[in-house]
Length: 158
Image: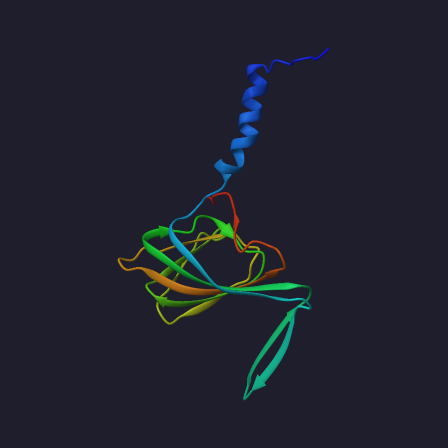
């Protein structure tokens, strides 16, 4: 004998909320075109040291690492939505101005053409093109193997 259960209105509402909440919490972008240029994996991580005339650099990444370079084109008025990255990202601005909004301080930083910055990763932020021309930049993402480049995050109180 087969038993059928009838869902009460409360059960239906609970189920609907469980399915819908990730959509409500996520803050997707708009006006952004991501063109992956190259992706590679470094199975043993990255370890490099360099020193030249008072300048020095150190890169020390343990474990299997994906390296992905992406060209982003953002229409005027475009936004990335609140998100984070699972590792550091090196950003170089080619055209337009990127406005970076930090979730903790709610402060904006503007990056015009020819500038570069590093997002350390594991930090919620948003980025915008408030200008009248397309924003074009290149980002090299360093992340644990198999992780997505972007992690949607709830909107900050900024």
